[in-house]
Length: 435
Ligand code: PGA
Ligand code: ZN
Image (cartoon, rainbow, N blue to C red; front, side, top):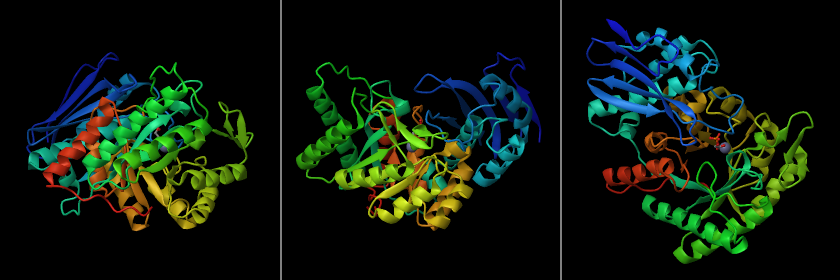
């Protein structure tokens, strides 16, 4: 195998390309700095397989879990590019169909637990771009390359319609996301239309209460009004009811508390500082149960901080017919999930490829979640790109839902891709929900 490193070896370089003269397999890798929907730096990879290019740009979170892969080497994005360029020849010539092998190779090269040497953004973009290039070379869509024999079911779209926390400014709710899920929809098209209608209705109801509302949105495209949690709950609940009645369709109510962002480790309380409320772990548990009952929540993500396995388990015992979902708790990491499975912490998990770093590891995590009866929800990040890969990944992992916002180019890129996949399959049945 002959590899050639291209690109300058100085700190201002913004892209680097490695090529192999060997045919088939991973033929070349090119990396460049690009930007996400928040304007933060990210990494994009072009990977060539049999002359076909796959391209992927890594998303980035704001309310990131402590145990996630980090996007870059501590030296920054340029340093990450420089470091990786020394190692990337090792990937040239690898079998592009073997996601696990690529994943192991990236981990070996990196040598840290959280990709802090070559960067999780590098691992993400190369692993996803490789899978895409392989699918292109085979002339099949990515979801079929990842799950050749099916069965294929459409995930329900779960969309952020109103929010606050780390995704929006002062005066917005403490709770990060208020979500709609059209559980009664019979097709993805119906589901998307329902979520868009809820999003519009939420705006209408905000404007009715606040004539000075500017139309401001949070990072994921949910409305960001000047409002406390209680009012937001009532408003979203009333909007969901209005749209459900109008469309004659059940639409579920979900929330993501991203509670690690509320948790004060020293004082051991959840601080809702915009609402001026503090809650002990027990009070938090009671509060969540009360909310679940009052608003008939079908989806509750990260109701407790990322170490609170016991509280997750208690809540899962006490609430039936609700997805209790670990995001920062599991961080798409198999060993963290295993710990949860042992004590029944949650019954569902978010799947974010960039939390673990590589597509291979994320697919492995998904398999383990399914085997243990955990529902999967494939998710975007608050800082995302116009890539549509997670639409394919959601189908290939047999996710029950896909959480990727309602409006905005980087959100609709995934949702519109689901419409294309639906067409490709000649109409795809919706996933089976347990709530
Ligand atoms: P993040 O938020 O992408 O900022 O981490 C999304 C989430 O918490 O689900
Ligand atoms: Zn979350």
